[in-house]
Length: 343
Image 1: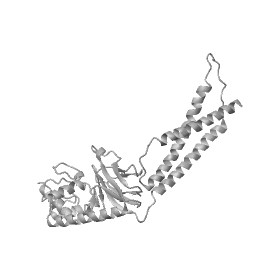
Image 2: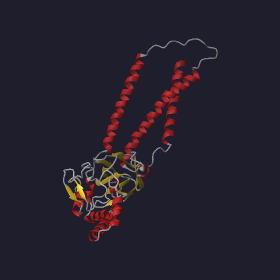
Image 3: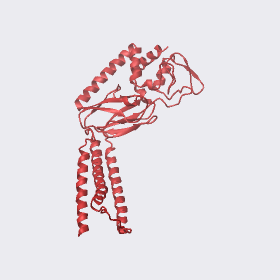
Image 4: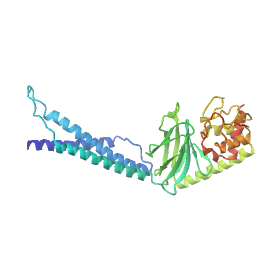
């Protein structure tokens, strides 16, 4: 009867400490707001884990603390305690029960991952290029932006790549995080469900300015998104027409910076992943097949649109992503005009 009283006291204390620990953790504002459908499933699983953490914390700490307070040795007592032999049922229990728990958590984790990665055939597809140290978003309408605009309540498939080093796409409010790997295209699916302004960060150490590699993310209504797409398409078409009629080195320099060209091509003659642009225009370029070609307008345009067709000697084939093939003739003309200015 006396032992039963101790067991009941410990059970009550475990329940109380579990609840208090859980409430303390969930009210600590560990997470920002949920801004995607995927965040709901992720937070549900995390909340379950918090409950288990609180319970196991109490299960370990309470019996220890209770034993120290209630069963402490009396002053002057130097006798030995009763020897404790092995307890086979207890050992079986603490082997089988954790195994069942781990298998169950693995199952619900896999099920949760399947829900998060479920593909929507009508998903909006946007290309993302991450480079030191900026983000570029290429829309299927033929223009690029340094701000990621997304419509609310529609799944988006981001096709992500990098021309330089490993980066990682992370919007805390979306919960999902995905590495951006050089030489590969990684998929990132998200369904924004909360209007507002957010920020994408690089979550992988990628160089000296890693901490500043951020870009705005705007979740807007469908009508506002369609209007923004129409406006940006019109601006891109107008710029393309102006560039085709009158190429401009100033516009080309802005493209050089915003498109991420500077991540691989220097303008001061220093080495990089790709050939420097200083003095490139009109020079003789040695190719990996032993031939050479003049860096004229036709060659430079071909190198941008089909980067794998001709590889410059001593440089790695396939280092330049094919995402630049969607540039307009006007944008390419501006870039070439900028190259001409780098004598």
